[in-house]
Image (tube, rainbow, N blue to C red; front, side, top):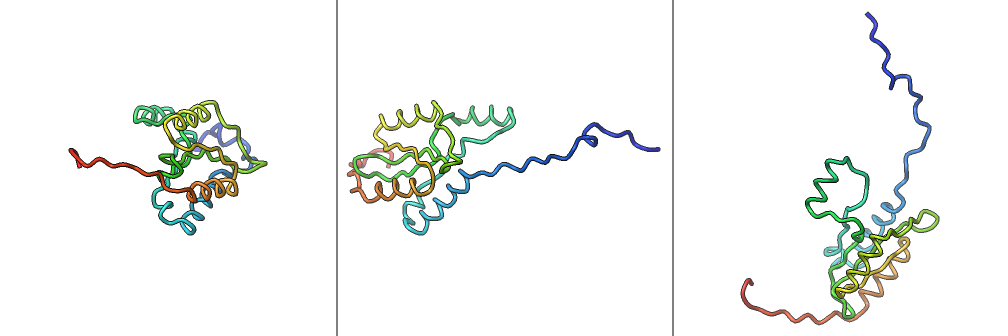
Length: 150
């Protein structure tokens, strides 16, 4: 006996091309560059995987675990030029660049208020310039108090 045809079997195949993650590709290139040019910084720098589309249940679980909207894409926890570290909101270069959201602007403002350098970088070249200038600055002198807990 023949099986009934399902609705999804009647749907036309999608002719839409899959989305290209320009931002992700440029950011991966930035981390490859960092590994070659500044291996110590590469060992400390990390990407915060806050973006992307998720199933509601997963998104709720991650939010409960501390995921926050607007957190910058890249963190370089190296103290330089009087700052405690560098936060970068990374966007793809034009013409694929996206708008910086209000929550991203707010986060950059907030970390700057706490003594971190905060920047929006549009593309690989701009991010390289910001990181090179930051790392070329004198290290911030950090006074470590030795005592309880260490």
